[in-house]
Image 1 (cartoon, protein in one colour):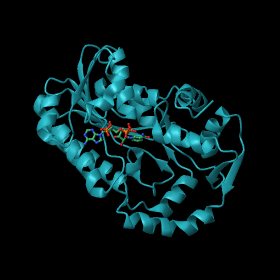
Image 2 (cartoon, helix red, strand yellow):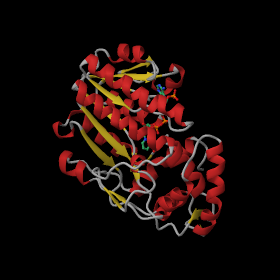
Image 3 (cartoon, helix red, strand yellow):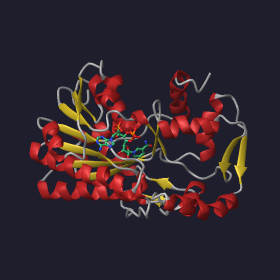
Image 4 (cartoon, helix red, strand yellow):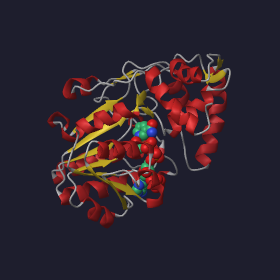
Length: 330
Ligand SMILES: NC(=O)c1ccc[n+]([C@@H]2O[C@H](COP(=O)([O-])OP(=O)(O)OC[C@H]3O[C@@H](n4cnc5c(N)ncnc54)[C@H](OP(=O)(O)O)[C@@H]3O)[C@@H](O)[C@H]2O)c1
């Protein structure tokens, strides 16, 4: 049982990944401190044995010191996923610094930091490994997450904090807002609309497989101060990913919008988002979504013996009960 009897902090426990991780750790017998900015949002964790909900905001340095005192392991999952650069900088950089400095002061055994493949950017090469230099571009999320990683490494080195960084792809599974709920809502339309012919590659990873890797990273000697991609490798196509969700409602009809249509509206979309203070690099995003790309997971396989166990078909099937519960699937 992973981390049985150890005290672990999970930041972002009111979110999708942090909530699933907290439940899994508690189930394995760890003493889990689940960080919540707003404890009421942690209601689904309240009655889970071995979970204590602790109030705190990662941007509050003193509070993080108090919360991390006495912890063996910290899983730093919390992040700002949208908003202006300044807003995301505060959580994804200042927040990371607070967590790492508090971990140093508390002498924790390891910090597992959740980053993202978005640090490689939309202009990443066709075959990405952990040695591929980050190229986040000007998108605030990609940039601040890349800077967050740098902060983990700097403080880790300066203050002797053992860390391990995971870069997940598109995390899907029950309770996933983006890659299950929203993608399913697109896929259930008949025909399913998509940009291009759907032969480009998404980078999905099923939530349970990601958690398996994070648990290994918390203790495995070979994971110390290392960074790991977490995706399905080789990747499926968008047609297979969306098609898996369409199959839940019993159709496979597909409608490919010509890529040139996206290219024509891209500058306007970019202008609107820039004026709103959230530039996105839409032209690069279009070629990213329609292009072929592999994120290698050979490193996690070779160093930690990890590889995803859940096929895309099985993972999508496991989302069905939750989609029904949400009233999205009959
Ligand atoms: N979902 C994906 O496909 C994906 C892919 C790659 C990487 N990631 C990374 O995975 C991690 C978790 O993502 P997710 O999908 O679980 O996101 P999520 O559901 O939006 O959860 C984000 C969590 O972070 C918390 N948080 C944000 N700012 C905070 C602050 N200042 N202080 C304390 N807590 C704060 C949120 O708390 P509130 O509930 O109070 O808002 C929430 O619990 C993030 O680091 C993200 O970058 C996600």
